[in-house]
Image (cartoon, rainbow, N blue to C red):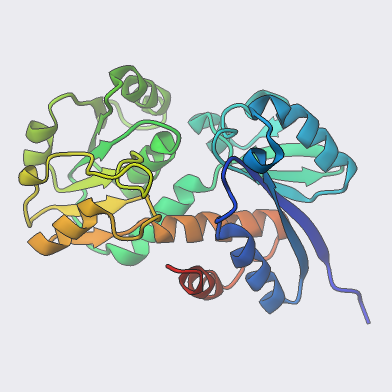
Length: 284
């Protein structure tokens, strides 16, 4: 009888005590007959900052970790510390998944896949002519990349820091047909011409209440997508649903970035329904 394959995985980030990622991965591994231990490495609890990353990566190598997920504030700081980057991670300038093989660390980005898969499953047939993305911060590049891969014809990115929006546009323009990505400054005008809106800002999270745009400019013909999942129903989604807009919450992005990370760590495609059920059982 062959022993079960076993994997040791971790999540590095600040304030991750409530993360649903570890239990989702462990439940999927149990169902697949894989031994899988997923440890949280919470910088907040350890009283460490991002400058501890080199030391933590050295420790992970020495302790035989097979992979790491990486979240705020480490997704960009980790780039120069890795041996290799996947083409997606290189294009996005951010890593959320690190595969460790024979001591070599390769950075990947599964955030974009998470958003795209969530959208594909829940927004079939949604018009993709003109889309407005609010926010160009940590997740902004991944969401923009996903929207372009989904087939958006014209994507307008708006951020309070327009230099950040320009940086995302510049970073992705070489990979897509010229003119499909642009920076916007007038939210009302952009939304008036749009088919859909994506909120990639933190506004709407429990700790950043509010909405990322004036609700008066919403109308029922728009679809609205969120990447926030604390809470699952943000004030923006609630207002959009009241108007009759098609909507998709941020839970699926968290779920499907996880299924892709699990596949990269183990070589096994997990049952996504187990991720979905585990996510929901944890308060989703």
